[in-house]
Amino acid sequence: MSLDFESYEVISEMYKKEATVGKEKVPPGKPRKGYRRAAALLAGTILLVSVLLTGCFGKSGEQSDMQLFEKSTADVDLTKMSGTMVYSEVFNMMSAPEQYKGKTVKMNGTFNVYYTEATNTYFFACIVQDATACCAQGLEFVLKGEHVYPDDYPELGEEITVTGVFDTYMEGEYEYCTLRDAEMT
Picture 1: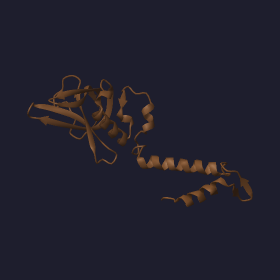
Picture 2: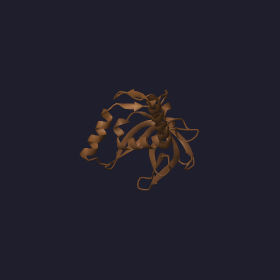
Picture 3: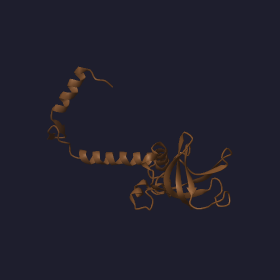
Picture 4: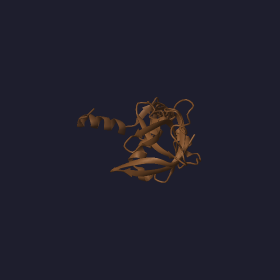
C-alpha cells in the first residue's frame, strides 16, 4: 500500500494530537491503559504459534532443542536436536567441514551401506532426514577396530547411534566427510 503526500500528512497530524480514551486524556507517546498488557499477550501468542509451526519442539517424545545446552560427551550432539535441526546441522557439516574437523560428533539415523566395485570397498553411513522426511543427508563413518561386513553391522535401514571424530579425506579431486574411530550402538 502506498500513501500520497496528503494522506501521509493527515495521518501524521492525527498521531501528533492528543488521543482520548473515554473521558481521560492521554498525551502523545504515552500508551493507553491496558495497551502494554494486550501487546505482551499478543507478542507471547505470536511467539508460541511460530514455535509450534516451525516444529522446534520436534516430534512427540523427542527432546527439545533447548536441551542442546546440557552437558554432553560429544562436541556436537545431534541426538538432542529435532529432525529439522539435525538435518540442518549435517548439511552445514558438508558445506563447511573445516568448522567440525577434530570434533566428536554423536548422531542418530538409519544404517546404510554403499559398495564400489572399482576399489572393492564398502562405505557405511548414518542417514538422517528432515522433519518432513522428504530430504535425506548422510554422514559416512568408519568403526574403530576390525569389523567384517555384514557380520558386524546392523541390517540396512535399522536405527543406529554413531559417535566418532569428524574428519575429511580426498578421493581423486573430491573431498568427503567421515566419522573416524566411530562407535555404533
